[in-house]
Amino acid sequence: MMRFVLNRVLVAIPTLILVSIFVFMLQKLLPGDPILVMAGESRDPATIEMLRERYHMNDPVLMQYFYWLGDVLRGDLGRSLRTGLPVSDLILQKLPVTLQLAVMSMIFAMLIGVPAGVIAAVKRGTLWDYLANGVALSGLSVPNFWLGIMLILLVSVNLGWLPASGYESPFVDPWRSLQTTIMPAIVLGTAIAGTLMRHTRSAMLGVLQADYVRTARAKGLSEKIVVLRHAFRNALLPIVTLSAVMFGELLAGAVLTEQIFTIPGFGKMIVDAVFNRDYAVVQGVVLVTATSFIVINLLADVLYVMLNPRMRATL
Image 1: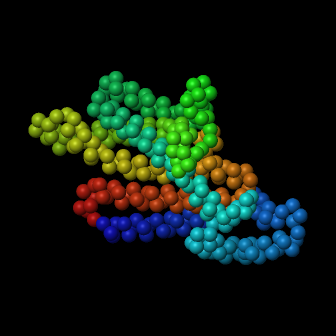
Image 2: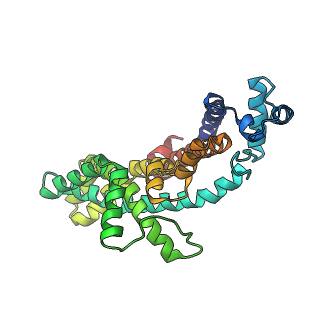
Image 3: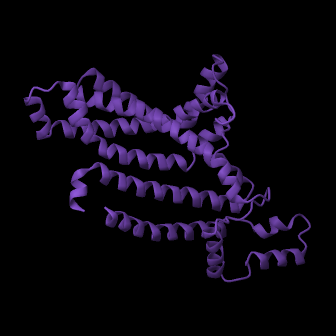
């Protein structure tokens, strides 16, 4: 097991290096000169030259990358050109918001998608199967921004049940926090629920035709025990892996959804940074989200091996 984890870590390291190179080059490809932005409106030549020396802008690009990478490894992601605050502090402020939204979206998606997939597989070819597939296809087809606007119009404007926008920390007011994040979580979780339903159904159909399931039925076990204890436990392995990957995608930030509901998470943060040409923030957010996605995929591989005894036997 330790050898497997070590191999996965060794594979993740060069991936992280490639991601860091991409993120660094992103700043070079963006239009504009951040040094001119930092120099202010006067753009005094002495100030510009001093800033270029401080941030090693006069050095070759390769040396600039190593200087930047060294700062990143020390936890220094630079400072926002707009506010002057450290990018790492800004990310730590926004990360709990995105993390809360991602967790709520995954809970909603799993509560809807996984049971629907199991029912669709067990009731294959019936009305329940067609209904579950139709709902899943609708969830995958409906754009997030349209669904978000319709929920605001119906739930907030017409019914007045929930606030249309804004965010409150659960540490300040848990009930208010739930009210402000439940609609964005439903919007983000709808498409994921559709994907989970389709994969759960496919996995269950394959497992229900296995020999050990037929043997369990031949022994006289109830259908509920056969489905939940024998079939579902084995079909759960690919679902866990898929859920981990989708959770990583949610951490990358839901740009449109956070913009619609004015949620101050990663998505809104990177949009504001792009509009303000705040390159250090763009770099920091992209680097953190890409690293999080790689780490979550690594954890998903390890979890898959831990849950699958056949994989553990081959290690």
